[in-house]
Length: 435
Ligand code: CMX
Image 1 (tube, rainbow, N blue to C red):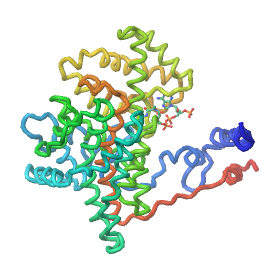
Image 2 (spheres, protein in one colour):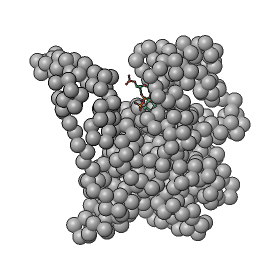
Image 3 (cartoon, rainbow, N blue to C red):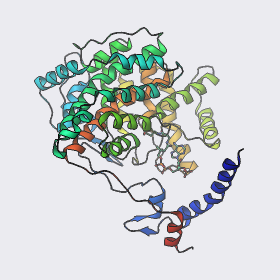
Image 4 (cartoon, rainbow, N blue to C red):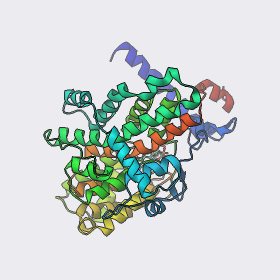
């Protein structure tokens, strides 16, 4: 180890007990409105963000524009032969809070079609990356490469603050129109030998995405459902907050969304959907593909915890009940013949029965219930999307809807640059009265 690294390591080791003590013994000490535990502990529960696009209730789960997931699905127009509303209708609803008419949905579809052409340099850049590059790195890089197209960046010097929302809206729509094709390109390029299926903009976003992925119906409905439920989860989660934070510096939508996608790529956030699948599949492989007994599963869950890992797909920073996004996907599985008998679905259902009890006994997680990521891979896997390191890209396309709608409103309302205050450990020790 170099001298620098060794010295740093010693200092980190010496510092850790100070932080641990402050949380354990002085967590309730107030620093103004909030406690020491909140200040050190990831700003948990601090009310510092405003959004009217969605609200997350700890017990009830997410509401988009005041509507629960099932109310949203019921309220929005659904095209003939589809089980779920179009993503375009949801985009209209997220941005405005109004349920669109069919004509208004058709207008969004036509608008997206006119904005959908992805410049060739984006595909060239993706092809130039090493093939083993993670799909999320490819996705984020493609978004960042597109920054060249930003209408906001071009118009910034010629407009006033109250006009910023307009080019931000243009950037947001241009991005939303292109993201499905970029995502499908990454999938076909990385996993299907570069056999790219062209976009068909006569289809709605869900159907076009399914055909570009090369997955037949009902995957179009899976895509619609998946993009909608993953769209927004109020503003404090990592991807939404990162997008909002970067946009608050008046970085355009491309810089901001790329930052949000980088946050989504963390295993404690969106990447958990990949982790769940790799965890469950490895576990099933060990058992020769069979669904394990409750005893074996309990043992495997404890092994994961004892090795210092989290159980992916369980727990949440805000929710204190089963995530309704988990339930929406579980209901889809239950009502889909074949899928409801799939061994991976059965194992996921068994984990749902067993893991909360294990986590409660473990005694650390404040929420022992499953989140959105615990169920999503099962559906993807069933429809042939077995490459689980692609799953977070799907989450990313959906998440873009929410975070882009939010930054359009941020600019519309002229929210300022975000700049919370930090303190030193010594200041906290002084507040605790121990130095
Ligand atoms: N397995 C094991 N331990 C867990 C746990 C889990 N699923 N969930 C929480 N814990 C632990 C935390 O690591 C923490 O331990 P330490 O005190 O040693 O640091 C303790 O329980 C308290 O955590 P918490 O207050 O309940 O949860 P946080 O708000 O800190 O974290 C989350 C929330 C989601 C990061 C956490 O529950 C977790 O790591 N879950 C597994 C990963 C996952 O599924 N992430 C996806 C979330 C949804 C999404 O964003 O996509």
